[in-house]
Structure formats: C-alpha cells, structure tokens
Length: 452
Image (tube, rainbow, N blue to C red; front, top):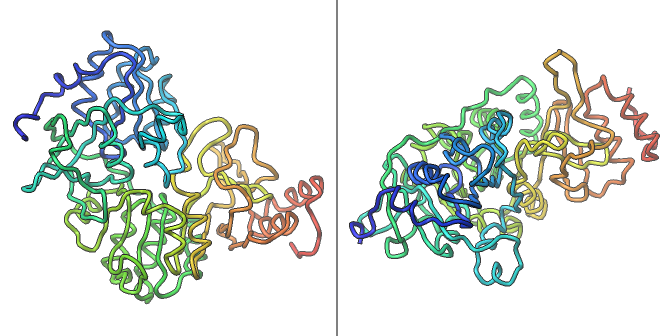
C-alpha cells in the first residue's frame, strides 16, 4: 500500500483545481514539499483557499509567490510572529480565522458543515506532515494532534507528507492515522520549525512569583505561551512542590523543566494519572526530543484537551495565560493591537471557563502593568476602556483573576466599581490617578479603597 500511494509533490499538486479549499496541518504539521509544488502552479490556478494554524518556518511558498493574493488566500487560525512579519512586508493574502479551539474538530464534521452550521466548506484536500509510517501502517501526527484526525478523515483527499524529523507522540487519542485511510504519501525531510525561547524579563519573574503563591501540591498546571510561563516553569522547578500534574493545550519547554525536576509527576491527578495531557507542542529541539516516544505524555485531540466540560472534571486545575491589555471593566484583550491582529484567542477561553469550574481550580490572566515604547515612553496596559478595533478575547463576566507585577485581583462576583478598584490597585502607580479619573467619569468609581 505504501508503494502504491507514494507520489511526488508535483504530481499530487496537479490534482488541485480552481476553487479548492485546502487544509494544511497545524503548527509543524504544515507541509513543505506540497506547498512548494502548489505555489509553482500559481499561474494555472485561481481562487484557492488554504487554512493552517500558527505559521512556523519555512514561510509557506503560497504566500511568498503570491503576496497580492491573485491565486491563493491564506487563513491562519492563530497568528504567529511569522504571519505578522509577512503582513508587515506587504502580503495581502493573509487573514485570521478566529476559532474556539476546543470546538475546532466540529468545523470538519460533514453533517454540520453540509447543514450550514459552520461557515466553512468541507475541505477538498488535507495535507499534513507526520512521522514516517510505523510497522503497523500508522502515521503519527507528532507535534500537532489538535483537530488533525477529524480534518483528515473528512477531507475528500488526504495527503501525508512524512518527515523523519517528526517525533512520535504517544496517545492519548486521535494521534495517528492508518495508511488505509490515506490517498497519497510524499516523502520530505526538512527540519522542523522551532519557537525561539523568550528570555523572561524581571517583570515576567515578578508576575510568576505572584502566580506561584496560588499553586500548591497536586495542582494541575496549564500554561500559555511567552516569557512569563517560561519563568514560572523555572520557578516551580526550584520549589519543593509535590506531585503537580499537567493538562494543557500547548506543551512548552516549561513542562520539560517541571517534569525533569521531579515536581510534575501527575500521580495525584483524578484523570490521566501520571500523564501530561496536551494537544500540540511548540518550542525548542529539546522539547521535541522530550516528546518522542515519551510515556509520561499523552497527545490528545483538542476536544478532549480543551473542552470546558472536560476541564471542569479535573480537580485543582490552574490555568495561566497571558494578555496584552485589560480595561477597568475587566475586559481582556490577548490577541490584537487596535485593528492589527497580533496573536489569536486559541483555547484561552476554554481554559478560563474550565479552570474556574474545576474543584479547587483557578484561572489567572497575566500581563505586565505597562510597556515602554521605542521612544522610551511608558504606557499603561491597564486602560480606561479598550480602544476602537481592539478584540475582546475574554469577556469580563468570565474573568476570574488578573495578575500583574503589582499583585493579583479577583474579578468574579465583583461589581463594576469593585473591578475598577481592584485593577487600579495592580496597575502601574504612574497611571493610577488617571484611571481613577476615568472611572469617575464613567460612573464606575466608589472611593472605598485606599489607593495611596
């Protein structure tokens, strides 16, 4: 079967016709050889839509060869630095496709798509990079489980781009697919895209220290992306915390630190005992080596890893994510700067809700209280109101805790004036008077507090 289905990227790309909708695998599941061959057909095709998630190196050729979008339109389900760079350099064929990541598998279900429940058509092609076929005929999805299995079985044509550099990620569930379900196989051996580790700043470390006070033995940790989670992973590794567990959307290098230090055993979890559950991994080569055939990890489909109902069943789930801005109404923006897309909402809302419903669980949204412009001017990240065009990633009623380098504040159950007071208390001191004035003007200030 393998020999019968083995093909060249050029031959497979010839099957694409005008108007096709093509799924590329997410993250490091994005194909390279097929993408190159498809881009070479730019002059022969029209109206091709390609959808992926978190663009990592190499830059897709369909963007490089067609920046004006004359043939190819590229959807990114979660903007990455690479996506932003391409847009800033003039690419006009890139668009954001906002999901609720925990429900993303449903977008590929034929019955729902055919009924018009979702605004995307069934895919003509699914092209995904995997590990090489094993002795039982399975291709492992490696670093990206997510919704890959549902995308694969529901596409009209499934193309596997096997790569010997892809680690084998043990399940879990839906982490592999059998050759009998595959239409074409391409062999390709380019290196995997890595996410440069962001060195934590002093403020990241201060925020991490505040978060650390909320964590106790046997908590189950979910970390988002960025310098602060990396700092927190390092800090946890240096504590005497015992039997922490892991259940996350993104597996990052911080989990390697927590596991190898002996802090994260997972032995006290009330589900997936002894396993760190995740749905994709993105980071350094060290992380990818850690993933390969590691029995302490469980790669799951995103419905399992992210669904708030599943998360609520995990005792002592601590969700830690980063934001860009928050206003004094406690509306959280974690993805855009005015009208410019910076990142994406991903599964943040899934974990904010699920961790709050968890027995003994907490959701913490972290951000520095301020930032410094290129001109050296300090600006507040706690605002009177989010500016026009800014996306609300987490609505105010679902926010549990906000953490800055000045402390933490609980939002749940609080009135508008109490939220404003608590947020001003953890804002940068230089901006607190202005925030109080704005709260007074907006009639959400009651001076019961004692901001000095």
